[in-house]
Amino acid sequence: MAQVIVVTSGKGGVGKTTTSAAIATGLALAGKKTVVIDFDVGLRNLDLIMGVERRVVFDIVNVIQGEARLNQALIRDKRVDGLAILPASQTRDKDALTKEGVAEIIEELGKDFDYILCDSPAGIEKGALLALYFADQAIVVTNPEVSSVRDSDRILGVLQSKSKRAEEKRDKVKEHLLVTRYDPNRVERGEMLKLEDVREILAIPLLGVIPENESVLRASNTGMPVILDTESVAGQAYKDAVGRFLGEELPHRFLEPDKKPGLLRRLFGGRAA
Amino acid sequence: MSSQTLPETFRLRAGNFNLLVLRLLDPRPETVLPALGDQFRRAPGFLRFAPIVIGLADLMAAPEEVDFRGLIEGLHALEIVPIGTTGGSPQMRQAATAAGLPPLRAVGGRDSETELPAGSAAPAPADAAPQAAPPPPAAPATPQFQGSGRSALLVSEPVRSGQRIYAEGADLIVTATVNPGAEVIADGHVHVYGALRGRAIAGARNDAEARIFALNFDPELIAIAGFYAVREGLGEAPIGRPTQVRLDGEEMRFGPLG
Image 1: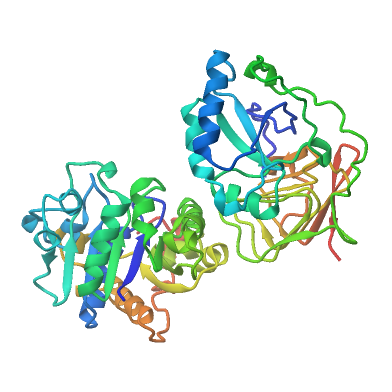
Image 2: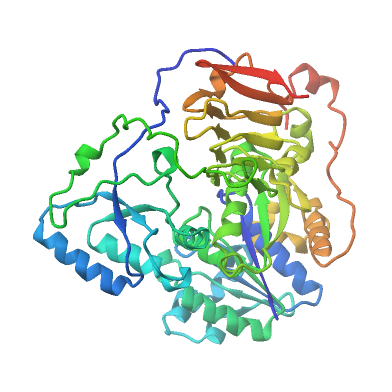
């Protein structure tokens, strides 16, 4: 049975799509057949982050409405074997998604893939609810910042009450916390929440901490999932997270400030980036 | 906490409302709804968009025989807004809750309904606006709490933002944290053996003896028997410490735990 994993956060702009692309690529690199579905109908981005935007012919809405077969809409990644992308539609809205249609797609994908990643849109409305409905596991992406933590908390409550597993009273959705855009220097200056504070409120197992890193933006702009940038700290942190997801025991890295603030920085209030 | 006075934007008060109760005698929406529709057609304007409570006490059916979702949909189509249930077995109430109809408790703990002649004009919704309820009837014949003591609702998962837990007629014990944006309510005491960072409401049915206990007291709002304090008004309170809150007249008193 394929495992369905939703990548969700409640809040927008915290790194869901970056995470979906990185984790999906990492799972495929680890030899797991993986498909990643963009549920953000109307604001599709995953194809850009995965660098396949020029190969999109059909999308998930076409498949649901019977205008294309699933195989026609799936885009096979050229860099990594066993990785596929099901893009969202840019021209429809989220009402074009139906529970029955998504159920059929997930069932059919389950025959060919080990992991089905659902890249959720922000919010707690229809698109987000559908993205999490079929989940067996959830990766909750959170920035070290109060509004993001509160929205993640909210989405955890929704997972417990609105997912198919909750409705059928089966074992609850397995939850993983992924803290992204973590900047140890800013944490030390009290400008960001400490990792412990985030963990204390959300109270779910920590999958990984992705440091704030310019490699993420570079990766997005070049359409290369950041996990393929093995030199970058963010890429390495995502690789660790995938390892932990698959059961490896790995220490958390990149949690300490890189260096003591210099005299100048202390004199000028630590404003220099 | 700065004690800057901002213009007041809301007040939180307990309110009592007169509501119509629709006592179900048949579990099948397809037989109830047409009959109800008929009656409503004979009295135009009768209860348009009025909130209504579904009475389950007279219903002779198993919970799985009742199509609550179908009933809710049908009532909405008739422009009636069901808001909750009253009476019925715990299983029945649970089934209704799952369909989005929480159990309501009549003031005084017993159903005290007045009969409405069939087809008569009911009080217009405007009349059902907040008003002082008649004093609760004398102590109900049946004790609300069976057994020797008050029962309690135990919650061992974190209560998350947006979640609301109500221990009806009981104490509430939370062994995890209550997060910002969450709400825990009990007719009895509220105990939080973690951090209380959301809202806590004890003595929700005007029990001034109810207390709030928290190992790490850091709430957004606390209320006992309708008296409340928001975080800004908690200047004196021992924030972050093990604390109990009780009501002394109209004043909140904060004391250490243990």
